[in-house]
Image (cartoon, rainbow, N blue to C red; front, side, top):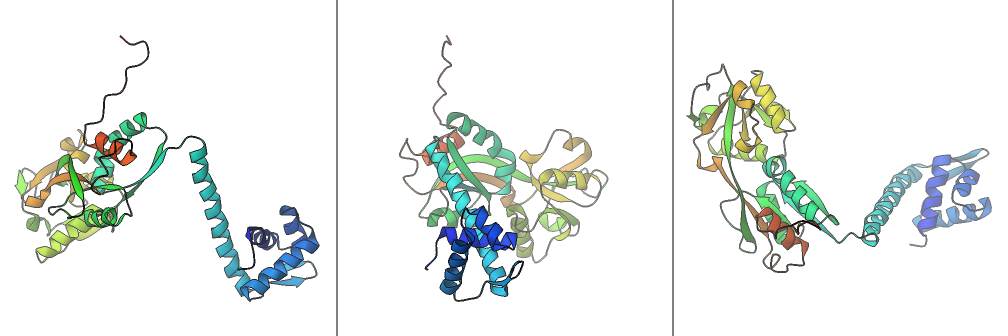
Length: 306
């Protein structure tokens, strides 16, 4: 490709200004030099990118396509410099961490806060995925570690216990489930559900279990979080399934909280990672595993403390 970053920046400036002289000024180039660069750029891509007019320029169809690509490229380069600059100012590491919605909403905030208090110069990209997606991503090296709830262990991964939780049914106080201590999931399928949005780990999990019973979830409303599920269920809009850890004290005053008579309602969350990742005490994957699993070293006492 016989063009460089200056050519792309110039093209974007001229396209935005719709004028070669003003675009050249933005890039600290003379109009004649800018014109030569733009002509060479068009020859390199093999298409006419802009039509010169008496009072400016207009992009061709190819020019509009080029403009969008160039804008994304320059934005990505800018982000690259921001990310790399962190290393020059003391950033020590970056981890990609995947977890299901339950872990992200109920358990990880406090644990990550503790991790960052110990290691403030580490950055974490935290993404929500289903447990099976997390296992696949960690095994293939696309993520450093994950929190999952699975019955079968992947042979190429190591696992550590993280948290234990249980899925419960939320129902309106005056509904048919009020007063019951437990319910089979198949009996819930007759009612409209308040659910997390499609793609959320819990939504996919419940849809699969409903299909295994030969039924389906009648999803009346999809929301973005557990608190919205609790509020809508309390209003009488339907029923919902959430982790018990997501409940707040006032929920039991306005909602019926019912146990689900299914083995899968017991959720044993585990940290999964590639073998050996927890062996190196200097590696930040190992340090995060230590925090998550409750065996991190005690923080040093403050200077002057007795």
